[in-house]
Each structure stands twice: as structure tokens, then as C-alpha cells.
Amino acid sequence: SASYVSWRGYAPPNRVTGWVNVVFIIMADLIGTGIVNLPETFNRMGWAVGVVILTAFGLLTAYAGLLLWRLHMTYHDGVTYGNIAKSVSGKALMWLAFVIVYTHFFMKMANYLLAAAKAIQVAFWMKDVCLYYATLATLAFVVPLCQLRTLHQISYAGAFSVLMISITILLLLIQAYTTWDQIGAEGVEYNPLPMEKGTKGFLSAFSAMTSLVFAYGGQ
Image (tube, rainbow, N blue to C red; front, side):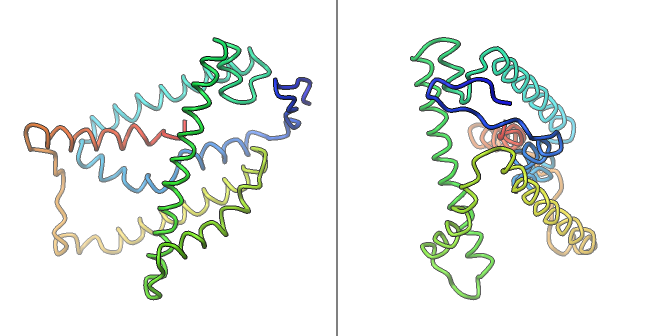
């Protein structure tokens, strides 16, 4: 149970989330639509380089999670990143953490909102839905979900998210298998490694690498 109170008088809810719920939270955070871009990224970077980068940042993500857990266990009043930053280094770091984290959340939410609205436009392409109404439809779906206040409640939404992305990946695999004999007719090229020199080649390789890095963007 919650036996401590944060610096703003907020008492965290009782800890009732089991490991299964935590798995759904982490999977929903890490596994998004960007996962469908990983095969193309491996195709450009090569299997060896792709596996090395993906493994290295996977280990760094696990280490960052371990450090965060240690901070939370050391500073029990750390309900947010800002609280922990204040306990570690004072108010200056606290406000820096608040500005960085909530600016990131705001920009990320705006990006996701735009992506969801455009997805609605694509799904209902025959209706020619303008972006304004597609955004309103997205908000009508997202705002009720924003009322979930605890990670335990969010874990059930995470389970639904994991189910949907799993179905999407399954459908893509089925389509790839059933249309495999049509690859030659579609003009698909294998291993189009960036052969350009200078800035263009660097940006092409860097773009592929960051796709692997941000596969762990949720952490």
C-alpha cells in the first residue's frame, strides 16, 4: 500500500498491478506501427549491422530501466521524473526535467494525433474526409482513454493495443506470403544499401540506424 506522500501531497494508489499487466504496458509502449519498418531497415543496413545496433540499444534500454528502478527505490517520493531530479540535484534539475519531459509529451501527442487523423482519412478514402473532421473523430476516441489515471488501468488499453498491432503484423505476413511470387513483377529490390557518397549517403545510413535506435523509443 501507499505509505508515503509526494511533495505536492499526492498519495500514489495501491500497487495492484501484476507482472502480466506490466508486460502489456511495456509492449504497448515499445511495439507500435514503427515495427513494420524494421524489415526495410534491416534490408538497408544489413543483418549483421542491424542485429548489433538493435541488441546494443536493447541492452542500454534495460540498463536505463534498472537505473530508473534504483532511483525510485532510493527516493520513494519520486512520483514523476521531476520529483526524482529534485531529490538528486535540486530544483534546477527538477524544472529542467519537467520542461524536457512535458515538451516531449506534447510534441509526441501532437504527432500521434496527426498520424491517427491521417489514418482515418486513409481508412475512409472513399468518403474524402477532411483532416479537421478526422482529427475530431480521433479526439472523440482518445479523450475518453485519457481519463485512465493509473498504469493498472492503462495496462488493459495496452493489451488491446498489443492485440491490434499483432493482428496487423499477422495480416502483413499473410499478404507477403500469398504474394511472394509477385515480387519480381512489382520490381522489389533487395539490399538497396546506400551507395551514395557524401551527405546523401550519410543521411540515408543515419536514417536507417535511427529507425533501429527508436525501436526502443518508449524507454
